[in-house]
Length: 294
Image (cartoon, rainbow, N blue to C red; front, top):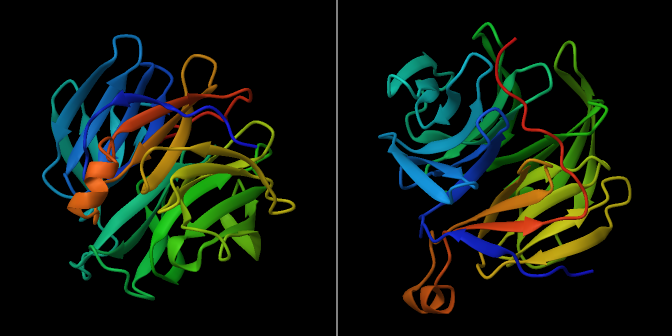
């Protein structure tokens, strides 16, 4: 079932728009331009979009319970204080891999920040890993031998974690222990190898359904992770749909990021709003964006 097309909210023309997360305290949406090395802060109530230059590729951010945000950058985990306009280094688990960068990430319900890596601008097999940054700033590798570490999400009961390595074109499910952050019993929840494009970033709604951005697919698809069935399709006027998250006061606005990265001049003429931020009202509520910290 297709829905009405989403509305363009910010014609940012970002190179690689990604990583949206909703800060319910400030009622703003954080999102990033990875290749443009900048953080975007979109305020729906004023329709203003502020931009902060970070100075290195920025894969994902999440709000911190103590204020500010935590960020996954090319060279590790950092925090950012908006009042002081200051970045602070936390840890770089891949300091020995300078040609890797962090990509997508988000926090679990216990406030740990999960984020994964990949080779910069190349799809090189087995170069990436998924890490978990705990609230005490210790970090551990959870998965290895990945190609494009991407979307993450959890079921409403926090007993299942979903994960996307985009090179596989599959959404994996793992049994998840919220207390220990241990993963077990990997299995395929959604197999998208037969369709156009592949899953990129994702989010989960309160019914436990997965909404996945489809890179090179001009859409976001809503999947049932128990059956792998496609339930709904949100058509987006940009081929490279990168991620999505629920925001707004009722968590019923689906914010969608897109990219211009790698598109030819002709394709850009056909997709003038590629790289923009879109919003799609939905009939279902999303799960909250969890914040980092205890």
